[in-house]
Length: 184
Image (cartoon, rainbow, N blue to C red; front, side, top):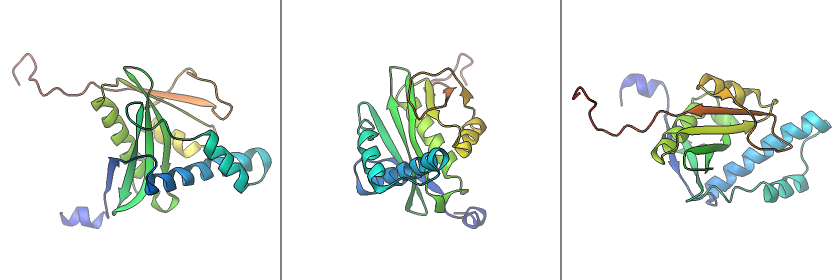
């Protein structure tokens, strides 16, 4: 490792992990608590109750983030689990980004970008040509990050009482390694 890389701090590594592993389950629970608390604070002036969290986790489970329908990527920063992002394969060319989360203690360290890049790379490797996602207006940090990474607002592709905006991005095809017509 070069001195400049060492001075910059630990790098993020991202890999697929079973959705029900202890680390993935902990990250998904933290994700749900954060988005739930933010919604309840905005609409009811209070945080979620433990009962609402448990009920919400059952209703909005992540069981579909498993092959062949999807997968969950876990990001590690300095070896510690720091975030996650899921991909749902909606059809032969479209993947939906889901459960994007970076732990508060790991924010502003490049984790969101690393997770997003890994999700796009994985989607491309699976033959996907487009990534779409839904989010809420109050999740301003997420919306800004998606815009910074080339996502544009799109028409709604589903109905959900907790969804207020939709984004999409066309992916460049996976490089085949075959030289182009010029032979380069």
